[in-house]
Image 1 (cartoon, rainbow, N blue to C red):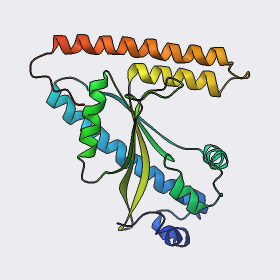
Image 2 (cartoon, rainbow, N blue to C red):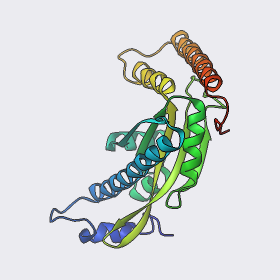
Image 3 (tube, rainbow, N blue to C red):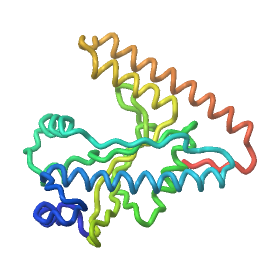
Amino acid sequence: MESILENEKQIIKNNQLIKGKKQYSEFEMIMMIYQKAIDNITKKITNIKQVLSEDYQYDIIINVTNRLKSPESILEKMQRKKININYENMIEKINDIAGIRITCNYKDDIYKIRNIIRAQEDIKVLKEKDYIKKTKKSGYSAYHMIVEVPVEIKKEKIYIKAEIQIRTVLMDFWATAEHKVKYKPINRLSNIDSIKLSIYAKIINYISDKMMKLYRKQNSGGLKIYK
């Protein structure tokens, strides 16, 4: 199995691997390959969404979004982690350049989605972190998967890393709001307000659990629960 790192020199030197006549910079070419990985995973998840809807008779996956990490965010993360800044380290040590987010209604649904992703032959799971069973100190809760997916460029198959985040709608609401409050403001968040955010996350988690128990009760008998 060849990775983008093993093919880096060939990719950079041979612009014919990328369609079009424009002479791309090294960074642009690498980002285009990551974008192809995002497109492939998004298409795969969309197909999974349809299969799950047919199997369970309701939309387990509510929404699928994706993003390509900006150059500024990549640079900031490498500096924060004290990683020497070069393409080799970027490809090898930054796992979330390509990001996919899946939202669903209930925690049970998260594990159904995780299990079917694990079962895909063309998605290799490298690492998993369950922030649902072990919530972050901030209150953040989600299921993270670092995966590798094949990308074909001019008959050359290479494997690209991507991060998949699976959250309930309530988890996503809190995480999105928390990010805007904590990372985008003019004023720095106080310790008291950080504690408040953690408390709000617990309240949201409590509501989510109650809704899930109600759903289980109404659908008991034949309902598959994935742990």
